[in-house]
Length: 98
Image (tube, rainbow, N blue to C red):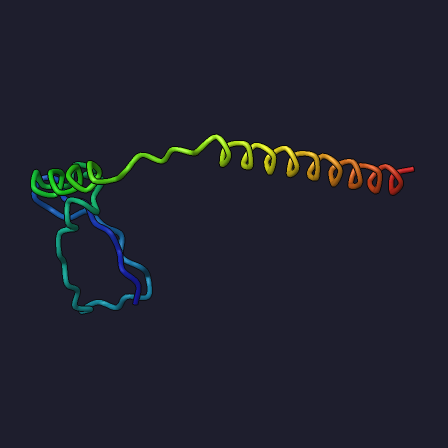
């Protein structure tokens, strides 16, 4: 059997039961935990403090001038390679439609 959802309205449950559930079918009803029910403020103050402390221990990422130059050269080479591949694909498509 599949799970179904219900909503509490006026201290009663409103739900639609699948047609293949026969009368007398036993069900178990439990509330959905708040963090799974759209509550995005689920972190406790202790969890927030622990997360902030861990973030404070992260060292900043700085590139040396040599590393930055190498990174820029690699980006430029990749850009040129991708432009060439794009041009090749465009030529193939153009030939298909001619």
